[in-house]
Length: 141
Image (cartoon, rainbow, N blue to C red; front, side, top):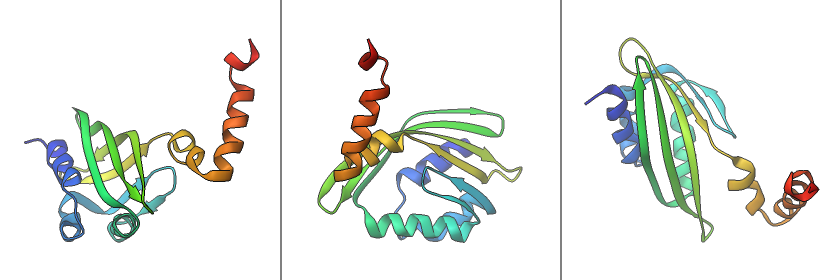
């Protein structure tokens, strides 16, 4: 099993109980970036995951594809869950860099927060839909 496969399995099976093993997979100064966070350190990353488990029910994280080239892995994934009774699905891609010891030193998540999050909010979503239609090339034809 490659270091990328081991990290994939850890993420796909992550629970509040397995958070205690996080430092086995990431360095103490790991950097994590997503549309809402830009943090450094294993404790900060643990807090992001704890907050996720506190806020989201029925969590599912599945990796669709994984590629490894030297010390960098690219991971295509689907994350889903329920927040306040409403289900959601997010498709994304992660760039994961590994330190010499095989642990993750950088994890950058890329996903479209506008269409997969903000557009689903009641007031903001309507406004973003309007703006999107106005700047769309199809809307200008």
